[in-house]
Length: 214
View (cartoon, rainbow, N blue to C red):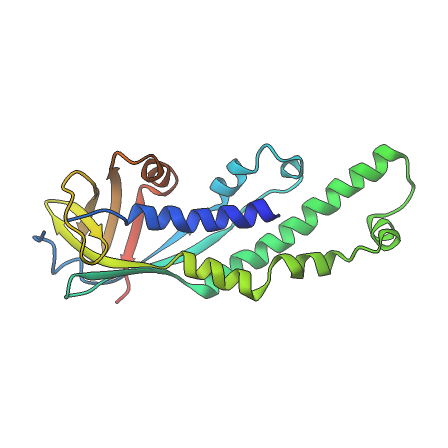
């Protein structure tokens, strides 16, 4: 479980890495406003825990979070996650963890020849599944994940390329995100970068389609 939670944090950092580059303006007026997308992290989480013993019992699905990207007239941007969507995703994950752990323990009991239910085994061990879940998904942990998804800085667009960078940094013409903008749909299609972490971000994220919501 700790590894899955760590991977969610890594996912947040991958999104931040995707928007950690640099850049000028023909679509500057069209990209202004707030854009939203739903990122399903299920495949990423499942792939990264595939080697864990519990993975064969736990099917990770529907772990989707709503991301918002806001591009302002003053050349600044902000990326953030919908806390409500993140809470809902974790609630789904809780249920999947309980189902997976229950199936895992049932097989363990059967292999050991013990004729008892999972509930009886937990009671004998003094373990409370609900308590384990609550300790794993604390409010502080959720706040930390929300914070990791937040990224802001400055941006510029030119010839179908989006450059983002921290305030005060200089441009790097060799690192950018290719995008396609049509009406109220914005698609991040390709990441151009020499950084390995950025390549990993692109593998999990792109193409990423956003809809204008404000």
